Amino acid sequence: MYSKKIAIVALSLLLPAPIIGIWASLNLDSVGQIIWTVMKFWLIVMPALWLLFIEKGKISWSKSSMKGLIEGAFWAIPVGAVIWLLYTFCLESYVDKEGIRSQIESLGLTSSLSFWSFALMISFGNALMEEYVWRWFVFAKCKTLAGPFLGILLAAFFFTAHHIIVIWNFGDAMIVTIGSVAIFLAGCLWCYLYQKFHSIWPGYISHVVADLAVFGIAWQILTS
Image 1 (cartoon, rainbow, N blue to C red):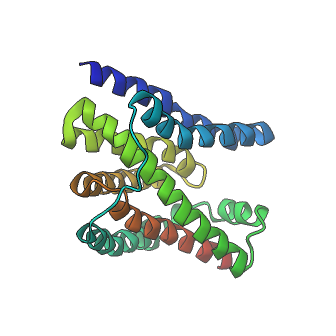
Image 2 (cartoon, one colour):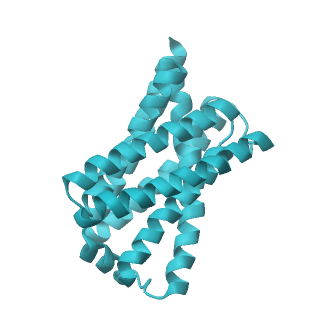
């Protein structure tokens, strides 16, 4: 019972941060960007601080077996393919292409070099951060609360929640619905891989591919 209470406290301290940060960045201009930065910093440092000072643990590199890396690479293929196929055959007509194009242009990412340099940096960095936060930390706490199976569903739900705000900004209800289901299923997959191999790296591989697939779609929108 004590461990469950501690897990609830940990989740309560972390989970509001991405929602607050994303909402603020989309609605509060320059102040929102500051809030987003603070929330992103908290999202990164809070799990490590919790491990070191509350759980009295040690930071590790989450070493994976070769079998885990191979399975993670295997899953990268269908994950990337599903994203591309969903966009091409289901979602393209619902996407706010002008809004996405304007967002990319406002960042100055109009050349292939600048765009793909940014895409690679964000994909590899964001996937690592999200696996560390959502699988290693959030899923572990959800598993303490509800066990492995329900823990996977709960962690995937929390992972999806803040993405809904982002998706809503670039499309309508159809985009939000299908995109949320896809993100939830991806979250379940990556939690499952973490549960199976006790490492963030198997999920990280297909997560990078997923992010790159999204950037590939964004590049297609920019250049079409």
